[in-house]
Amino acid sequence: LLSLGRDTAGQERYQTITKQYYRRAQGIFLVYDIGSERSYQHIVKWASDVDEYAPDGVQKILIGNKADEEHKRQVPKEQGQQVS
Image (cartoon, rainbow, N blue to C red; front, side, top):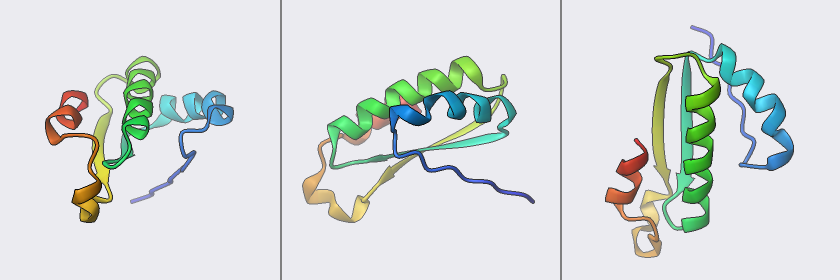
């Protein structure tokens, strides 16, 4: 098993190289902060890019991060499930 991770923190300057990685990906983790609506909106955009550039049938896993800070939640579970 070979696993290669790239954390671009959603930064636009990495968008060009990220699309190149999508083309060879067999699985993609999309991680957002449940306490940040802005973070979630970035995931919506990244998920759209994955659908456009990654191979058909690529495995995607959506992760709502910082679940230990439930009291700060801004993104309801149901909203997160809309992207998954």
